[in-house]
Image (tube, rainbow, N blue to C red; front, side):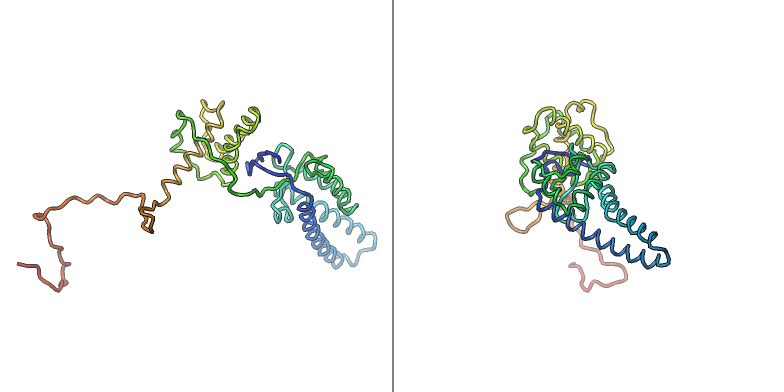
Length: 292
């Protein structure tokens, strides 16, 4: 199991993808690419019927490289490691350090993949994945990438530790609406497992997550917490949980009666001497007369 934090802080606990899921994801991507390639070739043949055979052959080779090689590279770069097949199986390509892949990583993976997947029908890629401890093919080795599982089981997280007394309550005015759910998930997973990591690795992960949270909230990490990023994260998570608890309705008596968290308006006490009968609207009869 790999303990990674992506550059977008998508998830902390990620598992290297197994060969069957990777093979099925690649198969889906190849089917889509081949269908697109066939459609492009048909369009080129119809549009270039007046050209000679050499020109048509050159266009076919260009279409092959553009669709079957350049297409996956572009998709992987723009989607930060996700393709249609990987989305279907909950996979993603990340760097060895857990960060998102860039164009150069996708270019190396696509260039090597043309040899080990397209030209050898996936035999070389399968052998390399079986030999590698983390299931990496040659394209991953040369590019410095790793295919991981983004979907993790729910409900395995431990208890988030409470913030330090000198930090609790300091972020009551912080705007947390811009922090995405994926980042909250990463912070919670880190806080529940930070004691299992080496101190230097734990501090580095906490610093990266704290910087991501600060960037999304628009407020910098307080200077006195720069050396204690884990306490900053614990305080922010505690503040978010407190806000959710205040917004949630409360139930009493075990029944369906909902007690609102908003207090009803105060009613001044009245006595029998100052009770007045309701006045009837002008111009309309009430249908009864007050007692004499």
